[in-house]
Image (cartoon, rainbow, N blue to C red; front, side, top):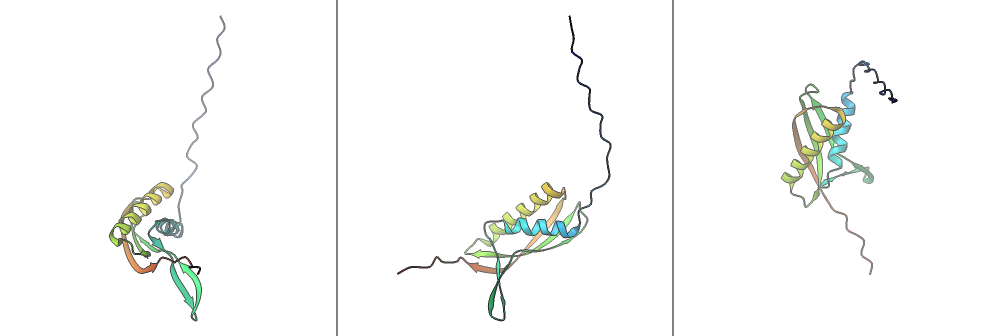
Length: 125
């Protein structure tokens, strides 16, 4: 009777060091997550009266990585339920920071700085 040898167990890899994620990266994650919300909109920007694109959400972070406090400045599509949109944005930002950077968010304050009307499709006569 022949027996096959059991596969050798891989040696456990020792920890190789620490991971530190810069605050600018955490801020960008929060801004991107807020911008991805369906009720979020880009604020129109003008330079000398000429349209110059738009700006998305802006975030400011304070506190340690295990208890972040985030202040978001966002524009919403009009008409949107501001309270429901803010709650959805809070959840989305909190989840993305937990998933991507393993950060615990203690508080997300959302300030709605603009209501942006939806663009109408051009009507052809």
